[in-house]
Image 1 (cartoon, rainbow, N blue to C red):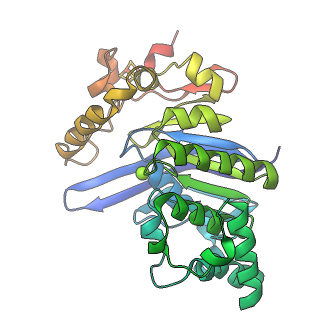
Image 2: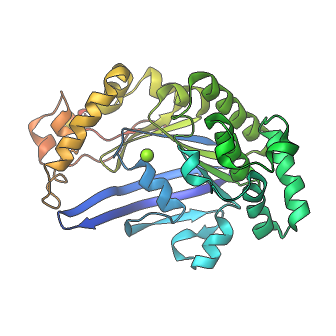
Image 3: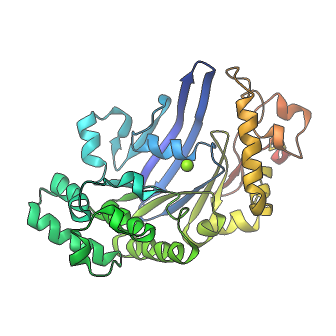
Length: 319
Ligand code: SF4
Ligand code: MG
């Protein structure tokens, strides 16, 4: 299949009084047409910044690298050109729909906005299309809901509306950042079902950003594990679960319940390191790695191919 998204050597940095934070630090990601790729890691690993940079919505600065999407050089487009892609060929759904839905517009107006902009639909046409989209995402009484406001809906319904909005223009790539995290288990399962159905019907490629390995197992073809702004491991979904190679990935697989504690530790490490670049000598995972060797703290490992289609960034793999 053709490459739809190709990110190469991407670096997105944040600058503050305390120094430079390399949130995304040399990332390569390829997503093919119709493929679902999971981007996995804890908060602060750079996965959300990667997706926001792909949409050109990052508050950080892109200092290096390239992003090609559907034959276009994303970083070279004008703002107008980018706007015509966003919400059209490339759409995004977020974790918290209430912050992305506008409280003063009806559900129908919000779903219809994209088709009015990108397809030139008039108001009645945009509204009837919005009703179709609400049906597609399994909202009951869509003719009625289309005239309601976000606060009148439950969290699960709002998330469906977000997906309807994102899918309204039949995007080639859907970027979903923790799309089910805020939802209870039943609704979560329904939303994942829905995404699978839409993917099957429309051949939408999905960049699925999550810390939830259950969601990854259910949805993804391929998995990219990020740590400290870098890709540390990548493989097909079965391999990542049956034969994880990077100590960080192995840790993720082992200690799912303790993730939250680990996350706090990660934050405290970051908070104590205001000196620019100090974390960048050696392996970024070394402070937390039980296998860390002396050279791990001096030299940064590169991604190494373990087997075809499976790469990992760790000195343990050197023969
Ligand atoms: Fe651990 Fe060293 Fe591998 Fe980094 S390179 S993950 S510190 S063993
Ligand atoms: Mg995030």
